[in-house]
Length: 245
Picture 1 (spheres, rainbow, N blue to C red):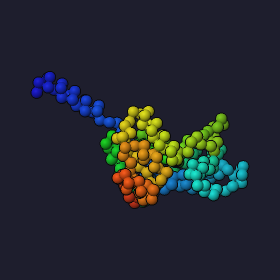
Picture 2: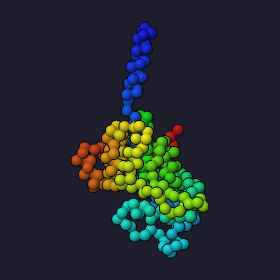
Picture 3: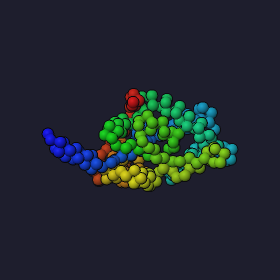
Picture 4: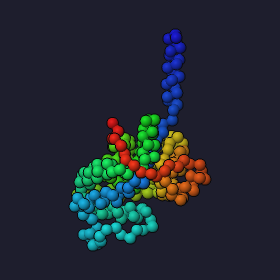
């Protein structure tokens, strides 16, 4: 092969790589990637280690209020519980909770976990998208090699403690908005990206990419999967296996 031919082949190879679309895989977390509802599972851990309900001092309430039909309102009501908590303490508790949780024999939705690992192996950007918060999600993201977490942001006051308020619950349409913004910011192809969700509230997020995947048998998502020909994954659970290196 002549030097000229070698150069031409190198240029063609570089052009092929450059033409490959940059894509992402977005995963809802609770009951899509892990079997638990992370907010509530973490709350049990937080309570057991002595964490107090930040609503008690003001309104005398204990436990969750009656469930509103608005999932965003439920999200806000839940995180009010952490008013007055130290972010560092919450993050440490998140590490503790996840270290134990991941060892349980049915911690993960196995088909989704396998899909995430395939996306990582293919070089796709893996992003977790959840109504939960960073203390519950960062240990999971680090464990599974997710590049980013789009979640409900807990607000911190001038005293360095949590106010109990959140910026925007990462629920429903907020997920689609966050996904679209992430795709644009990182110059990723929406048409070539994937999204995985298990609940009707994930529908907007699924529609924000070219390759939606439904996990489990939520009636509304099943309807859309059948109508649009979207792939479906079973919701069977199992262990996470060894931590990736």
